[in-house]
Image (tube, rainbow, N blue to C red; front, side, top):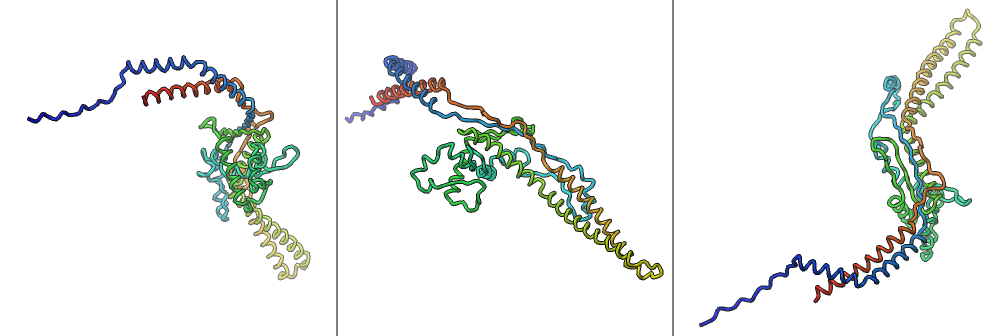
Length: 359
């Protein structure tokens, strides 16, 4: 008679009880207590390294500028726009959503256009004129690392260059500088979301660069802003000014011609002779009327352009000496010692766990 085949026992998965967990923790604590001298030595070494790091690290200078942007939202000249429109003139004054509306100005200040224009602008440093890009490269000691590359070693960024003639390598380096500044050094914020105050902060290893770059960036952005906002109104003013000047010349010419005609036709018996004088007088009157209307529209357009011109007022500007941010020696000792101790503790615990698993 065949005996039933005995089924192999299935080994159940080991489960760690609370007791086992407590015992494991006790073993780890005992291990660390036995190795306390090693942990202390590692902490001292880490503290020394932290002290060395803090003493060799250069301070970072922070420049801050705060300005207020006040933009006209309404057109108080609407009652006069119909008069100018009769002559085909747009006095402007309408508002809309644009690149400078709302929080767009914050993004615009960090745009490639504004940052690159600022980087390629001139600055006086130690008696020499150079671009902000050159000063940035010098402040971060990039040329020391470029010395091994002949192409990079020859790269220069003169002030106010012809941007269209840049090489691919110059574009690449300038783009690297742009990304480094916008990601790490430049901060554009609005302290109050409902207010108009805008804060621009730039940090750099070079104090002159931090201050100059901050001021120049805001100057470039506000200049571009004002020119863009008043571009249409300025075109209308220039057109009306040209018409007014042309009519004024014609009016002066007609006035002299009418006076000469009167002087030549002094005989009251000859009526035909006075016709030319009458025609000139009539043309003069028409020109006077047209000139008066054009001058009136010119003044309205100037008022509109003045209203559309945004008011940008600097509240706080960076002044030397700037605020310094330095990794202090107390922080260096504390964090260095903490890091050194954690490295040794992590290593000891990791080795213990690995041995237990492989046992």
